[in-house]
Image 1 (cartoon, rainbow, N blue to C red):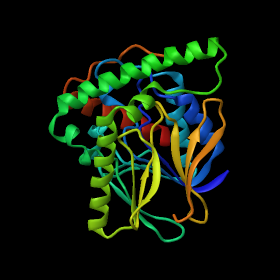
Image 2 (cartoon, one colour; image 1 turned 180 degrees about the vertical axis):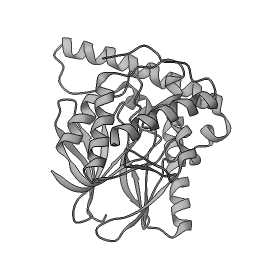
Image 3 (spheres, one colour; image 1 turned 30 degrees about the vertical axis):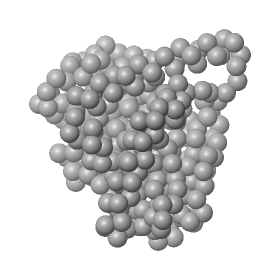
Amino acid sequence: MKVRSIFLSDIHLGTRGCQAACLLDFLRQYESDHLFLVGDIIDFWAMSRSVQWSGLHNTVVQKILRRARHGEKVVLIPGNHDEALREYDGTTFGDILVAFEWLHVTADGKRLLLLHGDEFDQVTRHHRWVALLGDVAYNLLVRLNAQLSWLRRRLHIQGYWSLAGYAKRKVKSAVSFIWDFEESVIRAVRERGLDGVVCGHIHSAAIKQVDSLLYINCGDWVDSCTGIVEHLDGRLELIEWRHDGLPETTSVLDEAEEIPAVGVLHSVATRREVVSSLSGRLANQNK
């Protein structure tokens, strides 16, 4: 299917929880003029503990590079898990532009601010150790969820059920955190005089109107497997990619092979070396 733009965030390449196979199915289904990667594409936080980089992860990177080489405009907006890339703001690697944030104008004229959103997360900004602890806990939920999915398949239980998603919906503090995050992002967009925002970070996909502004969250490719597409007429749609490889529309807005760890990234300097190595590979593949 041909669309004008695709918005993806929180893919978390390099982790066991990354649903690379589902993402590849999604990318095969949708062709676009613009591909926006809205943060946490490569998970340096998790890779500092262990690297779970499979052949499918390589395929994701290669497919994105191929799309960029064939003329698709690809913009990478780093998040907090791949924040080492932020120092390359304005740099192009393998036809992929790295930008701290981006202003996108839809086909019907809506001006949308694209950013990851971690700057509106007070825990990530001021209590980094709490954020790291939460990341470990979330990864544990993802692992438990994989075991539950295996058990459900053995019992021939149809459909996909997310333990992490259930926790986010039922724990009052998590619901409150999501609400506070959305309010903070919308306030910043309103102050800039724009029409809306596309972000990620909190792994909670949404597309909705808040007063006169659009709030759009891409979700993630660890738990929910969701993305946003802009159709040729500017209409924005949230797609949930079901685990049977079929798309499921969850909301439409008319207005709108593992390898051993290659090193532990304990310091910013080490992360820079990894980023430099990745960028060199990207540049070489583009030749």
